[in-house]
Structure formats: C-alpha cells, structure tokens
Length: 207
Image (cartoon, rainbow, N blue to C red):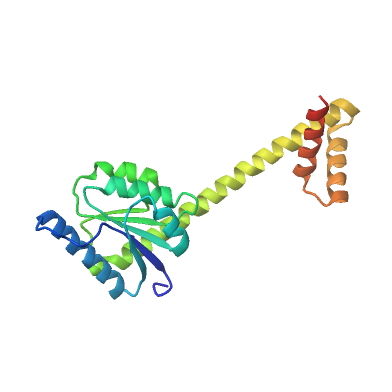
C-alpha cells in the first residue's frame, strides 16, 4: 500500500542561512524524516511550507496523508494544515521533538490523527503511519454513521409532522396518512421524506 500512498510533508524551509543550533537540528530532523519516508517506499509528492497558500496546493496534489514536521511553530503550522484539510479531511500526523505536550489536546481536537514526540527512527515510521491511517478510517466511518443517524432522525421527524397534518386536516388515521404519503412517493418516484417535505413546504407557503 505504501507505494501508492501519496504523502505531503508540511515543514519549514531547510535552507539555513545561519548557524542557529535549533534551526540546524530541525533541518537535520526534516531531512531524516524525508529519507525515512523514501526508505519505507512511500510516495513523497511534495514538501510545502505552512502558509496561506497551503489549501490550494493540497487541493491540487490530493495527498492521502499529511505530515506536519514542526517545532516551536507547531501550533501555527497545525492551524494552516487543519484549515487546508477542512473541506477534504485527510489523516494528519505531527512529528516533533518538542517535549512540551501542552498542545496535544488542542492538536487532537483540531483533527490531528497522531502526535509523535521524538519518534523519527526510520523503523517506526511505517507502523506510525499505518496506525494513523487505520484510526482516521475508523473515525471517518464513525462520523459517517453519526451523520446517517442524524439524517434518518430528521427525515423521520419530517414524515411524522406531515402525517400529523394529514390526520388533522383530512381526518385520516395514522395508517391512512402514512399510506397516502407512501402512495404519493411511489407514484412520483420520490423518497417518502421528500414527499413529506414538499407537502410541508406547500402548507407553509399557504399559511
């Protein structure tokens, strides 16, 4: 699967113009991450900065997973990535050497799938990404199930309201009102809740 998995790394520019030890350390870490991805057979399609253009770039590249490689600016980078993936959710994995874990709760709440501190050994990259993908797919399935349940509840309420109006205005019993809605839906090739909603819309207009 790794051969076809398209990965984008969001990281600061590696062109270090000075001898700042922290910047040099982060540059080395970023290089190690990219080498580790390539050694594990992943398709590293791009390395992008966390800037206002990230949304457009991710939309063009369609990655399967986004890795954030950040240190002190991790929160800013995460905000850019989360905003960029809001319309098209993707697994987000944060690699950092920053031992300050105060941002973990914020990161997970924002949509980060895995928050990895000091876990950049090449041998760990594959299991970390595999777990992140599995967790993301599980969460997406749960969200889809929840959305489906909410939609079903809304549709049921619409049908119940339409049945109630038919019973009140035309003196029908509940089974008769339901049968009327169901027959109309079958005749018009519509779903039951669509017929109910159209009926409610007409009644609201005439009210």
